[in-house]
Image: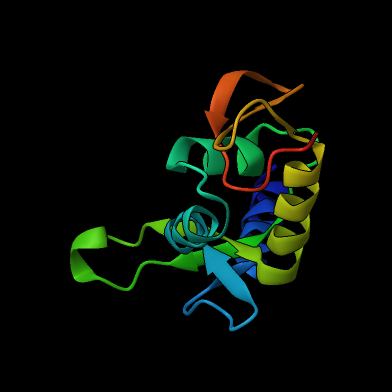
Length: 118
C-alpha cells in the first residue's frame, strides 16, 4: 500500500509546475479575456471550463510562489484549447437580444456580445 501511495504522489506531482508555461493560462486571465472578447461574466466562464460537457481539459497545476500561499496550487489550461472551446460554446448559443443569449446546457439567459442571428 505504501508503494502504491508513493506512486500516486509521484503521478500527482508530474503536472505541477513552478511557473505557468507560456502556452497556458490561469482562470483569472481566461475570465478577463472572455469578458473582453465575448462579454461573458466570470461565472459563465467558470461554467464553460468546469461544467459544460465539452469543457477543455486543464493542462496542469502551478505552485503559487507567494510565501503566504503556503504551497497552494492553481489550475491552468492550454490557450489553444480554451480559445477553441469558447468559440464552440459561443457558436452553440442562441441570441435572444443584442446582448442576451441562451445555451441548452445553461439555465436562463446570460450576457453575450455578438450580432443577433435572424
